[in-house]
Length: 109
Image (cartoon, rainbow, N blue to C red; front, side):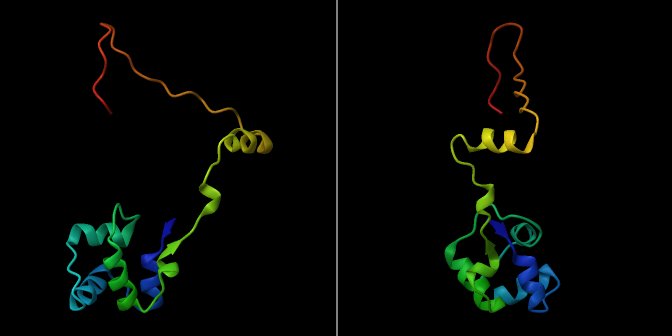
């Protein structure tokens, strides 16, 4: 899914995150500056469905305006190798996993 808040807001003549933040607060959705920054500038990590309802009401949009499906990004078992071969791309390079010399395991990444 692609998050499309900024363009949807621009279509409603909202050009700044702070403008949208004020409008959301007027409708009962108070969002911190940090979370608003994430919503405005990128892909949100998490978002409540109730919050999506308020955003849609404020922007006068549908959920499909905010979330754009990208089915081409979904890989199916065995499909990745076929598609890479078909376009002539080189085989993927295996990831390098660092190991300690004393045999102990590394902390989780």
